[in-house]
Length: 294
Image 1 (cartoon, rainbow, N blue to C red):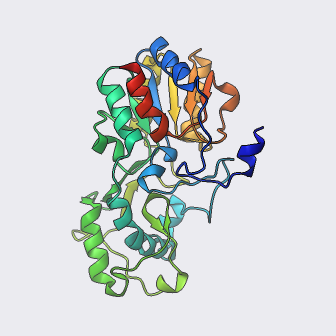
Image 2: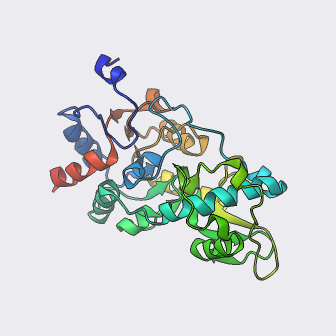
């Protein structure tokens, strides 16, 4: 336990971060050097420096109200109204988010053959924008929407136009941002909200993401399993691993005798399984790691 850390306020963007272990960079570089082709798994902590809030504090405890569940979204119109109203207000901020130094450094590590496949629990698309290739988005991509009836795909920006036309009173509204393009919109602003429907079949539109309560699609799971089978080790960056869809890869690695390293500010569900843990933010240590290795 670190008494100084315990007195610091929680700072998801790295503010108030203690100076890193002076040997951390060398130990992380040694881990990567010893395990060429390792798989990287990233989480919300990767994107907090881009202004996108995460779901949990440094103790792994969820912030705010429970997120919308997929079965409820598809079953209950009031739940869909809440989702789309909050998303209409929150999405523009997410759409403007840019890759941070951590994203760019990871793309550089991959381009230089230091790491292999990149899997992410994030839905913001920032890894691809930073230059990472072949990114496996375990939970989908918030910038896409799909009709659940005719399966027509939509860019999320097009759906934003539909939302603003149907709800002009909320156009330009602001609210405190929440994870993944959500916003802390008051309930009375949602009451008369008009939900968008598919322009082709009037069907149900859903963001192309894996909601809480839903499972990762089978084809995506098989691709992730293939990455893990080929991997020499696993490197987790910016994830508490509290969600099983991420934690299971740690269990798989341990079962196969493959070591795990984690770069994360705060506890993870897999702490007892880790060979190496670096208490640092991605945007602070990964650029230094690139310089160290080159």
